[in-house]
Length: 300
Length: 235
Image 1 (cartoon, rainbow over the protein chains, first blue to last red):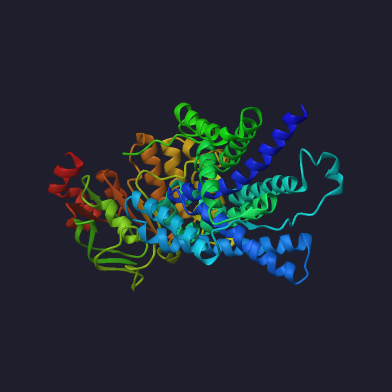
Image 2 (cartoon, rainbow over the protein chains, first blue to last red):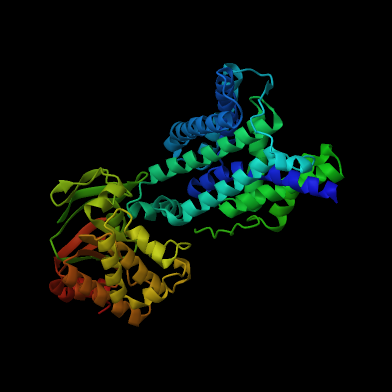
């Protein structure tokens, strides 16, 4: 039973991170129907920025939680700027092009950013300082849930709730939904669609950066390649949940996290990815629109 | 109020508007009639900047709006009810109306206009929390017109408001168009295939064929014109 609980909570942590990144995929897809393959790299850049800021701050005598907060804030701002710029450079000029063009541009951007970090930093794994303080009340349960895991789960929950409220109630949120449903009509309402698209990239990138910082301080090491596999997994989560759906991204992330966790725990860690992608294949066969996605009727 | 001067619009290499010139005066109801594919909807989309004109000029209150972004054009006071209504299907009726008032921040005035559209179309108030996509065709048309009115337009562009509606609903929509024009002094440019109804409510009309304007004049005259009777009125 305890082992099961450990796997359950482990999957929850893992799934929370997938969910944070999947939100960015799903929001961008919802608005411009593009799979932003460079999204995983934004997450990686978030982790690197946090590492740099954390090192500088630690060097100057800061400790613990304040470093984590400061490093996260800078990482979020920096990654958001990256997301914004990527959209402007790689996708906006292709707005009227066939759908394959921005997709290829996205793959190019992903490769570019990986190699840029590889050259600017290093190809080695860098140790990421543990910035998450010990929580005394958790000590009893430390074997099933550490402070980092708790922080990841809580952060994801809070961020998802804020995002949902934002989309539901603010003017920008409504404009985002309107743009996703009918872009030209949103323009006819006076919505500056370019601004809405930029905002979507900024929000998605900020979420990815939060995920990057959290997972880096949990795992304790990063390199230029971490965005690739995390990106693929989060993309899988977004498709699982129904791409374009925000609750779907969260659900997809959690389902994927649990699948991997239980597969690792009860079968073998070698099969972690096999089960993750097997799940994807099954969902695509039996529920092509994803768990919470609605199958769109293509107008001819 | 609105003037199109020799406007040409292209879809890729296909010329959809071949030099359209028309004039809409303050407070008028002008109708643009013609068969499918004549370029009526394209004319409206060109005015709104969605399919920008390649040649010619569009003046709104004597200023060129030809190269403005669609959202800037809306902010000047032009609002369109496009063909097929284009309700945001997953937004509630209230949210659809909110979107109409997207560029406005005067809360008290917005509330007043909301009350006004509910007096025009009381059914919308009953449906306020329903998703737009679940409304009937007639209700969606009412919502589309109300949504456009929420931006407090000085010029309202209506594209085939009667399309696919039951005869009774058509009557009601045309009555409302006249009411909106007379009560608010809203200028209206009405695109219609239902030429008979359109000419009955309009002051003047233009007839479009194959991307050009072939005939224009006061609506009463067009109603009597033999060519129009044959081609569009089925008389």
